[in-house]
Amino acid sequence: MLHWEKKLILGVPEIDREHEELVKKANDMLMALKSGNSTDEIIKHMNFLADYVIKHFSSEEKLQAQYQYPEITEHKKIHSDFKVNVTKLLEDINKNGLSTSKKIEISQMTMDWLLKHIGVEDKKLADFILEKRNNT
Image (tube, rainbow, N blue to C red; front, side, top):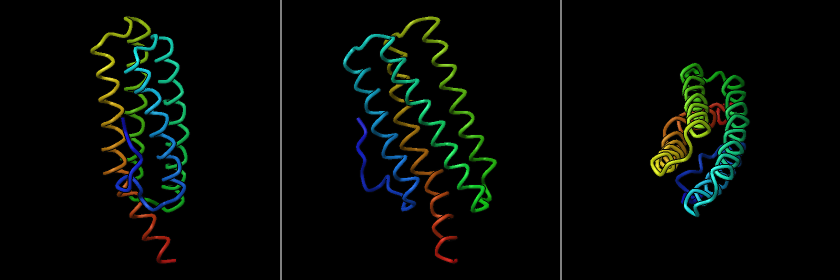
């Protein structure tokens, strides 16, 4: 399980609110995986999380454009790659079912994404936005 903790707070309220919600939605999915819920239930959670991620990416990308973030192209590519990976994973599950190894892959991907992406890429973005806000 993931916990919304101080190290995940970046200081940009609009991003932090969405990240907190992402952690909640990710935990719902992780609990469904751990509880042995049906494949349909897991897919429902994954789709819900994926939809929220798309909404969040859109919000982040609007902020990047608004503040003329110099790494916008790279950040958008990371977002795009994540969406592609989730789509492929869902297609594979729909085609081949939800094996134990897929459950582990989903859990690892979710935790890695949230912790690494927030902690590295989104931290750089937040620092840039905060600097811009403080200088205006």
